[in-house]
Length: 421
Ligand code: UD1
Image (cartoon, rainbow, N blue to C red):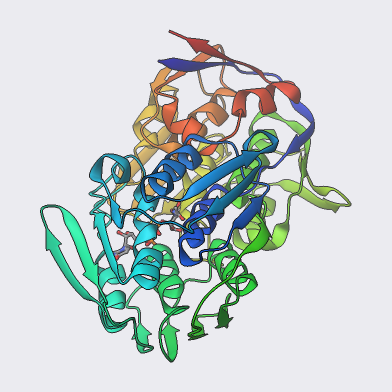
């Protein structure tokens, strides 16, 4: 199993290309199920999660051609051969559950494994299922699978989510594109990934209005057609690399970076002492002269502070010159990086959904273990400024969501390498 070894203490300078968004790509890929014509995606990141969702699609009979080393994917669901997404694939990647809405809408039937919990929480799918029932599907849970059926098609309806779940909004929105009549989704997710999915579906002939607001209006159409869509910049990768020069020192230009994708996070970075400039190619992030300042943050749905950047922000707050409070409101168990940061000399007290982070002047390299995707990258970030060597094991989590993280950081001066055991 691979590990990442980081030697701290080198400032970072140069440019980093931000990849296309993982979470957007996953949803756009599942949208291919909705039409018998080809859907082409460009700027797809090369990640383990993309390979897994591709396996799910292939298992349903979707034909996939990968061009330009995987950056371009051409998918054809002209001949679907199955409406069942098996446990062995869904358990590897929760987002596989997003095939449910498209499969049900296109074929009138879908059998999809329940994804189960994961390291960051129980993550139920009740909001997804309630939405599909409102759209007229019968939904039964048997043998660990969701069996959904709508033999006479889905019907437009009004859905009000009790929580603006990203996945449930996307599953319901995708399904409603082919429903008879109009569907209104209230308290919908406003995440850029959800807007990107709406844009892609509209390019395929869907009629979705209100993407990016909390109310979506979807007028059902008889069929969708093929389209070509570019995947937008990965805002979580971008936020991660914004933290890197703050921790290590220096100045890094993020090619393709866009502030509108992470407004609240960018404000918090500036409050902590980052200098952020928009450039013709993206964003430039420079560590200001002073110390990192303590900043409180609370994770919230978009446009609030993203939960997927909480671990990275904590790594930075560990080096601030005071105490900050980080509150996690989206997932119940998302501070597993804290005990690992303690091994590196950090001072973090976790109580329920709150973490009190007392800044320490310097962290020390240690052997640490990644527990999930974002936690693993926070340990690498912490290692950039730690004294000595930090060895992060279980980096398969990292490879799910970051493209060649060690190469990107090495190119801007970090002392970092991947070691195969
Ligand atoms: C997506 C993102 C993930 C991000 C999260 C929040 C993808 C592939 N993943 O996950 O990276 O951290 O949004 O921005 O896009 N919930 C329920 N019932 C449901 C659905 C969700 O109780 O039916 C709860 C979850 O357990 C969780 C919270 O709602 O506590 C947020 O989940 P949700 O917004 O659905 O996130 P995901 O779509 O799973």
